[in-house]
Image (cartoon, rainbow over all chains, first blue to last red; front, side, top):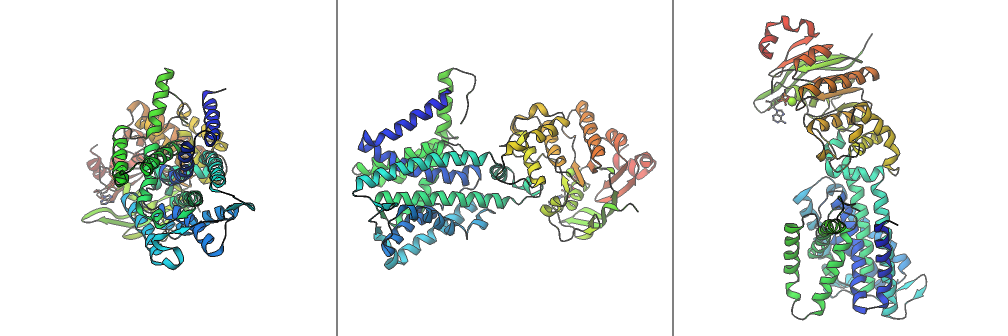
Length: 323
Length: 243
Ligand SMILES: Nc1ncnc2c1ncn2[C@@H]1O[C@H](COP(=O)(O)OP(=O)(O)OP(=O)(O)O)[C@@H](O)[C@H]1O
Ligand SMILES: [Mg+2]
């Protein structure tokens, strides 16, 4: 067997056994996998579509609030309904801005999306009676296919394995997508939109598709996040959340398959450390900023590339396979 | 009887105080191979830009296969079969040479977006072989020489089955030895497929060898339009081209 396959199987086995080994490791890995879906989704827009966004919190939040609002107002707790619904809601939130986003780039794009997402942040605060305002919404009575989770433990375990499975599925689908004509169109639209136009294709179409897929995945992960915490508040829509999403992808490796997952686990680990260590919370944004600056400086292609390089050195072989 | 594939009538274009095109009138019949020559800044690229609808004329009209392109943009023009290469190669640097070509094929054939890009592998490889680029199939543009990138740019236009193909200086930045090889392949394939071909070229030896008609431009105006053999008779042409 190829070493990559052996490694993948080992990682999977490790992931499956984590919940039965350590509570702490499980918590970190739980949010690691949830954020993996976020980061894989964001990477489709940014890494493959070349669309840098500081507004993806809106799509993550749309998913989270779908669970919160449906739960609070309709007593809905069925995840088999809520999860797909959260993807649809995120797409719905992304839809009005998508045609504009597909035609902007760089700083203009990032700030336009930031402004757009902050619209939802203030909307949630303004509509307090419906959204719970800054207090947020507590979520209860979650179930899957009619099975109501008896306690937090069971719910956590389910979200853990669902997120793990969905991360693997997302990886598989993204890899497949990249091999299709549509996937290559997204990369081409990133590399040279003008050339696509001179081949008779409107690049904004591929970018829009990438943007909406990306939003759907962020929505899904937002719903998983809200379900795991059984709580949602407006912080999820704040622009710093978008910053954390961007952080994961840049830190792990923009436009790589596995980089976003690596970034997601690092962010989850950092978040856990901050949450469990007294008096460091105020340094959170600062720490993220310093780490991202250090990453861009020392490993501009992300941590995953440094790991590939190290692996190649250790094997002592002639330039390695990037996956 | 032989309707012109492309006709431009009284085309003018100014950029600020610069006259890039000055009342240009030309046409090409189907399958014709014509060359545009002229010193730097004489409006050659601008003419190609206007015909491909990237730049809008101030006055005049472009008529392609009997239809005015006044209301046609560059995307639609490409869909209609007006394809071009670029003075500076325009490629997808994250894709391999093979994928660059395959994508052009996919767009031309309306291949379903869900189809695997690999399904076009054989055809793309074949096109690369035709231009003696087969060995570069798995290389990405940043790993290729300038000359190789220029050819790849041409192959991408070629596989789109153009009804009018315009090449902007296909041999610039290519060694003198390779120039002839490239031009030979381009002309041979254009002839084989009956493609109407308009080439901007600085090397007059190539022009004299391959052109059926030559358009000499100077300061936006056409100072000569006709077969290459009569070109040197005109004092104006000799003056403009320094021959
Ligand atoms: N987009 C533009 N904006 C302003 N000026 C332009 C633009 N495009 C072309 N020009 C000017 O129009 C004139 C003709 O330019 P053009 O590129 O058509 O010349 P060319 O014959 O292709 O020259 P070269 O041999 O250097 O490629 C030049 O003076 C150029 O500076
Ligand atoms: Mg030019």
